[in-house]
Length: 327
Ligand code: AMP
Ligand code: MG
Image (cartoon, rainbow, N blue to C red; front, side, top):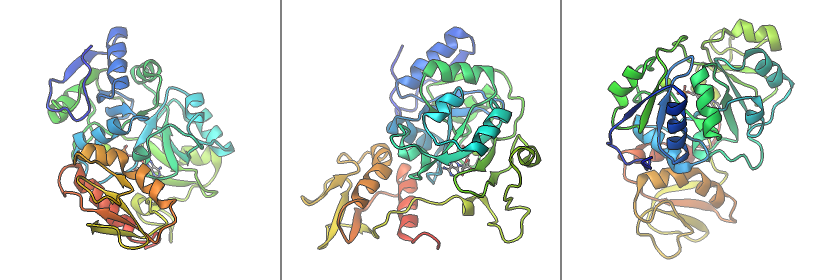
């Protein structure tokens, strides 16, 4: 097996037949840190080892996403989900009723959860799902680790429902596509936030909200309920450090801790990437911000990051972290 490094695009995209050998080969690629597109019952997903920061950064690079939005983490069963997030009674009922299936649950991350902070965009909640497609379930079991997977299309393009769609739009940017034929649902998963007492529908999808309400009672539905936030984006909190951020710093002022990039002054506490590798910087971003946020300091000063490729998503997140939560 060739070991492909994330970010080593463009390369030849391998098309794997979704039989036992193909699934094993795809699982090996995922474990080596490469990107593999695979079928689910909703759409094709662009998968990466969710515990590998660099592999997760490669998802954002391949999709050319201008933002780090949180990704759905795919697991083969409820027990695997229970190793990552804290279930309550509502989550247990919904998982019993709809997993495997087109339902994503947003739940609090467990202490010591091994999933990359980049995959949840720095949040202390995690979106988890057990997909209802035999090929996806086989791949997740063979990979034996949680797999982060947004839809396998470039940012802004429509979601792919066949292996051919994926090759057309992401060919050369993914190591392999596991071809399991067309997807049955074609709609994305329904996303429900159970991280607070008030269950909320974050995204309508393959499982109707009424079916969920029949199991756990009323959901806050932004499209329906007056006074509720109007878009999923307004419901999803964004990670923001406790300390203020100062961007495009060239040095640490008294009381500040400096987060470096590239050649940095001696007082730099942590460096996102001494070699100016934007994928490495993305991989380190949330973990380093969290570490510096625990310091006894007045502010986190961050050196300038080039506004290209993954640097755009890094800068987007830094700029929004400057704005206090609630704004
Ligand atoms: P995609 O993976 O592109 O299908 O989209 C994932 C969806 O799940 C988006 O609507 C995200 O905002 C949502 N999501 C994922 N993780 C979280 C989270 N921790 N909190 C809130 N929403 C999330
Ligand atoms: Mg999508």
